[in-house]
Structure formats: C-alpha cells, structure tokens
Image 1: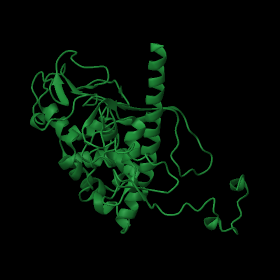
Image 2 (image 1 turned 60 degrees about the vertical axis):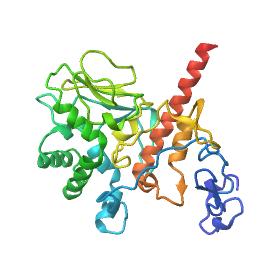
Image 3 (image 1 turned 180 degrees about the horizontal axis):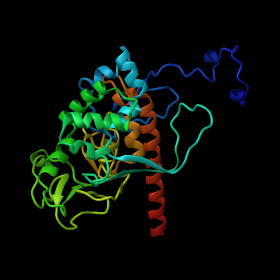
Length: 336
C-alpha cells in the first residue's frame, strides 16, 4: 500500500484490504472503560489506571438538543458551532504564524505558537464590548444583540437560549459577575489563581482583598506569574499561561459549559490498586487530554460531538502538549 494515497483508484475496495481494515473498537480498558482498536497502545487512555479525572457531565438544554443534528436548527448549529463558541468565549484565540489556503480546507490548521489572550472587564469609552466584556453589559437584550453583531452569521434565537444556559450554569460567569459588583475601585484587580482548586465553602466569598479562593478581588500585587490578572478598564491584552486550569474553559464555553478545569501542574497520578495519589507523580498534558477524548460505553463524550470545534480544540491542546514538552526540555537542560 506504499504510496497508494498518491494514486487513489475509486474502483478499489480499500475497506477490505488487510492493511486498512482496523476492525471494531473491541478492546476495553479494565481501569477506565475506554474503547480502543486492537492495535492501539494499551495504556494510552489512562496510563494503566494512573490517570483519573472528574467526569464531564452531559450538557443541559438547549445545548443537548442542539448537539443532536436531527432538526434543521441543530444542523445549522453544528455546521456553525465554532462561530457560536466565538460568541461566548471569554478569551481570544491567536497564533504566531499565519495559515493561508488557496483552496477549500475543511480541517483546522495553525502555524507557529498558539496563545489565548484576555482583556479588561470593561472596554474603553470609545470601544465596543468584546469577549469577556459582553458578560458585563447589564442588559440581556443588548448582550444578545452585541454577540450577533460580533458574529453576524449566527441566529439570534439560538444565541439568546445559549446565553441563558451559560449564565445559569457556568461558574466563571457567576464568579466574574460577583467580583465585578464588589470592585468599585478601578485600582482593584480580579485574579484567577492558576494553582488554587475551587473550594465549595469559598465559592461566593469576595472581599477586599481576598486571597483564599480561585477567583479573587485584590489590591496590590499579591499574585503569581501564571495567575490571570484582570483590571476593570484599560487597553491592554494579557496572555494566559497554557498550564492555567482556566485556559480551556474560558476559550471553549460550549465544550466546558460548567467551567470545568483543564490541564494544570497539580493533577496527581493515582495508584490503580489503592486509589490514592502517588506522591511526587503528576499527570502530563498528553495523558490528561488522551483521557478526555476517549470513547467510553457508559457515557457520551460531549467533546467528541463538537465537530469543527472539536478539531480546533484538539489542535489547540496539541500545541499545549508540545509547549509543555519543550518547557520541560528547557528546564532539564538548565539543570545539567
């Protein structure tokens, strides 16, 4: 079959060729119940039980119905799912290189380094609301109109329904609104901690200053280099660290509709025998996202249903994995 892709013959039955027939996903991991093809690496799903992540819940209405692809409305939504995600994403997506294709290219491609950036909570007086700023407009109708203006090809009725869902279920939207209401002084900052896990008892605690929860309002410079620091109003964009736990949720609100954590440095490996964390062993970015995109029989993987948005997410996370690998090599070379 060598070179066959360059001399494709539509008359050949490639499906039945022994080198191309990959059979069914009959191998089931005894640790995480992931389904795999027989030739796939045994531990690629959960590293032999060492990776255990919180389950991603199926989305509520209207997103669940929009993902079905069985109605004209849901088919329109899935065909334009990246645009609808852009309507609600809280960070901007960029890359250091430009990709240009003269012909139609259905796949998502990037060149160079991928980055996410976030701006202030409010725009300057002569600017329109964008990204995270739209959540603070204070008027439901104006918010929907602004989102449709920023992305003209989306339907206003769908945007309105998705807005209600995100405002009800997304933890970051709730946090940001509470934080915004408690920061009357322009010199205060909203900080999203990179290495602070959300604690239920602190979920609604915002003071001046506060330093013991994942989203805090502070005065001064009491934050770490990887924290996300937002001012109330200025003209500067800040780049978000790829290893920040909020990196994924802020960019992909239609995938992580609850605001679930993405990859970060503090995820421990688990002893498959005892179920306890393994001291000094952490889950890598590659293992984290390999676990997330697996097919499992007992649950429907919402990520895999997101079509073009899934393609973007996978490319984005592959760039993150490569960035982590290069950072590790740089750190290792400095020590030798």
